[in-house]
Image (tube, rainbow, N blue to C red; front, side):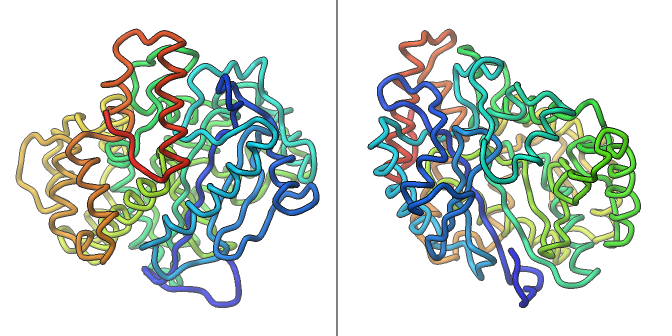
Length: 413
């Protein structure tokens, strides 16, 4: 989200979707993102401009990203534009014997043996990360995500947006968990990606913090409390200043002052853009309600204690929509007086009282009703895989997930 025009709050959005490239026959990771980009652009490149949607490389050579080219005024119908580029990419990579696989973690990848970093432009950044943090792990090469950017223009808009996102962040896995499997087995978490994401830069704790961000009320306070300590802490390891940029911040939502947006980073990528866009629209409408103080005052949202948000976040990582929320003060900020509510029930309440179902895209509404009724795709995957899935069963189910991405449909158990 960049350019001369700076959208205000709820005037500009950006969406980024990351997918694994796998071999068509075995579904093993297939590190050919450079060949895929070359097939699209005619040369090896970091990025390919396809109009509304752009393509780009990522840290690992078996990952490809699709993203909006700059801010869009609405996310509605964006699934169609993403699906068009995914179809194109699948066609190109099929010539190499590959296909795109959705969901946030490859189910049997061994990152110590199979990680290959992007070998072309921006190598200095990738090599510096690898030198400091040892990038041969799931937290670097096997955590495919969706990033949602929301624009702001003023300090007040930033404060409202940051407070709302911070409050909502613990609930996102209830809609979007897609990673119940790693290293060939069920992990016990529906959102396993987040468990690895939290630890990939543990050597310098200030970079990721507690994933759920600290409370701040202005852009200058954000610089002082979050960015400056992080730059100071990494400086001895990064004397050239390669990583001392705001994108070093690895919290679950980060301020991108270079594009005047807050980027939400805790979302697992889904089985198809239809699900991703539906979830993104639901999040935007929930944030809209919070930012406009429809249920609770801005001061109460902004000052809600981090130590009370973290248990909710940890519960949804493990149990997704079935996580029990017992904090009555937290529920009150969504206009509820209940003592116990599941995260899925809370989302139903939020969306029923928002304008989500009036956005004018029936397919997004239908997709969300499936997610609310059957759980996130991780829950549907578990229902299909069973308690101890064999490698053959994993290949079968993830093959169906690849078909969902190819056809732009939801995975149904």
